[in-house]
Image 1 (cartoon, rainbow, N blue to C red):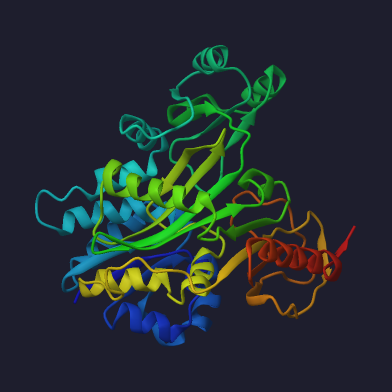
Image 2: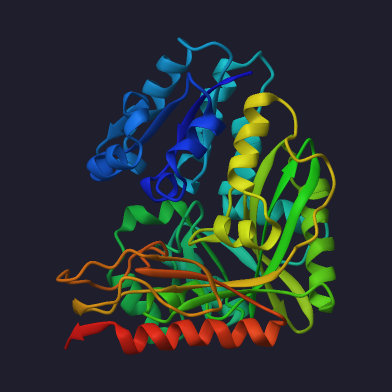
Length: 409
């Protein structure tokens, strides 16, 4: 049984009760997280306060990595687990140094972080991607556009939360964007052809190298539209939907054949349904953001995140090695704040379709446009008898919030 050091944002830690964390992590665990939420986390996890290590600017703080390595060496059979995109590579680097020679977790994880290397590997394995290239200068950007035309997407190769993603639609947009870019930002950029197509997400869990959960959902808007203020919904595809079968096959082909395989892993895959084909946007070795873990829990009666951690700690699967079928059809909706001051909101949403809800909005707070896709103020998981039924219930929650939340105009 291994000793766990968990690297996690506060948002994830607050999604589980203290007894769940204690039973999952065991007695000798340590948790590294952001100091900005110190008081909230100590209130939420009072019996685990001595296990919490807080850092200012946690995601960008380089000292976290060496502190993790130093403390891990003091534990019996240590293992570092990361649950968010920003922590994946530093956890892999530390684990490489804790294990026997020959461990290559960092290089394997990099193929789930560097979007260019990732998609180049997928293309080499015959998996459909949009045209793309690394760009290190404005000249290379215009050369790509001359070849493939507008619109294009420029983004960091290691981006997260849709941060730094720009859609360039025409020459005016290009030059407006260039005027805002520091020249040293070009060392980490890639460009790809923009696809105006519906987005599908597939989230899930592998244990002992076997798929346990593969859950395709349809996105109601894009992540960029979410950042612009639209509510973001995810609706599960019914098993009878032909796209469900296609997504299942593609997911297994990517994880089991094209990319490095981990014994246990969470994953988040994004694909476009473009011209009746599935075109890969990206894949990560962690769950999607928002409330994906709650969505999976309501759909499969399994906590994917905690099951993953337990299996890592115990060295064996806690769920067997069979692919689970959903017990119900669900969807989730994430509602962003307006650029205004919140005057009033209800404590809860009394709608029969809601299975789980979270309202983090604060009365009297002045909100601005979200910078990353993790700043929603309302989240709800709804169920339904069919895809259409789930769609109606997602709309019902969105309309309820639009009516019941009062903003200072």
